[in-house]
Amino acid sequence: MHPAYSDRIWQHFEKPVNVGRLDADAARVGTGCAGEAAHGEMVRVQVRVNEAGAVEAARFKAQGSVALIACGSLATQQLAGGGAEPDAGWLSETLGLAPVDRTAALLVEDAWREALADARGRADGACDRTGTEHCGTGE
Amino acid sequence: MRDMPLPAYLDYAATTPLDRRVAEVMREWLGERTGFGNAASDHAWGRTAAAAVARAREQVAALIGAEPREIVWTSGATEADNLAIRGAVRFHAPDGGHVVTARTEHRAVLDTCRALESEGIRVTRLVPDRGSVIRPEQVRRALEADTVLVSLMHVNNETGAVQDIAGIGEICREAGVRLHVDAAQSAGKLPLDVRRLAVDYMALSAHKVYGPKGAGALYVRQRPRAGLAPLIHGGGHERGMRSGTLATHQVVGMGEAFRIAAREMQNDRRHAEALMQRLQDGLGGIEAIRFNAAADERVPWILNCTFPGVGGESLLAEVSRGIAVASGAACSSATREPSYVLRALGLADHEAESSLRYSLGRFSSREDIDTAVTETMRVVARLRALSPLWEAREHAPRVQ
Image: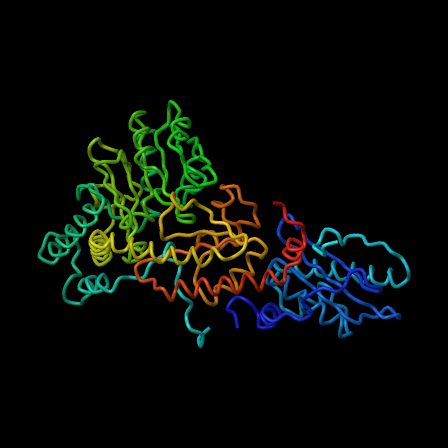
């Protein structure tokens, strides 16, 4: 598919799933971001959880490397579909990331963990919205 | 990759295709029975090769207004840059001195200067303004009492910016400092006349102008004598300045490429100008695009643009399936680091990374340009639709 990337990476980069945004103000929706806007690299993950705290929907947007976009796509697919947690190790292994691209997996893991904690916190009635204002949600 | 069509070629600043006419002339010197003689041999086989080399030397010299004996064959412009800088410093300042160059030079120049620094030579690296041009006045201010050499390129390989070689040459000549010009990107494309320019050394490349790779030359001024210490010893070829048996077919190919370039320069330029206009008009439709050299200060066959709102690696990975372009210089792409040339012009790392260089030439077509525009627009739009930063920008209030 692309001489420099594995088929799995390229597939998620070229046809990413779960691209977009959830209404950040809605109940049980959490937002997490990782990266540095000043360095032109940013991933935002949003999740909506049900009353039991399980992920119902996940969305992402990312600007950065091919690996970052691929990790955002695969992580949200995994979060919404259930199954193993898409931590950086799982993402790197599943996509066959080169060592130089593993930081992308770490960023995506940071973002979804923050989003999930935010969503569960809001579901519990907390209203801490840390970390969302710097990542392009327009808030 | 095997089943995919090759992308449209827009990387002429990296290398150009061999002109079919050049290939035909070269082939005559690759035959089993003729043309294999050593140009240094004193018999019929050698003399035949020597005559061909002499003719090629005339052709290369003619393109830049030089005398044939001022041309020294090398393996390419990189070797010519090494020979000029190191050779001039060794000849004129064996005990140490000062060299002036710029941060936007090719690595062949910068790495040679760095190597000299480790041997005790002091180096000043000028920083061009945002338009990527070095002003002659900057050169004057950088000169010191023991400056032996100024080394600046004519046309920048990444931005296409044209330096005022005539103005810089006058300043160097007044100060008694030698000037080396890397003309790899301009020879055969812009008129060059060393009789009118105070240039002492000039690096030339064959493969940037539809000749073969592995062939280049260094112009070394005879009057006033530039002076040069050799780097390669053994046999005293090229009047002692560059030993080694000449590759007749390569040399002949470079001569033919330069002969054709001299004749077709105007046509090539008109062709490039028309296509560049089309490219610029097309890409100009992309919101927030930035051109990294002013149109009136660059050649009409290199265009370097920055696309905010996309990751550089993603951009290059996706567009390169449809078009062959460069992200920074080909030499620096291999290291996957942002272009030092663009950083020297004041771009942030991520801005340099999300920049592409389009370069076109004699065999570029309108279809190539249209593919480049369509593909770039498609990829930039897709990646921006994925970007949370671009989304934030679109939601942010506009400043009038």
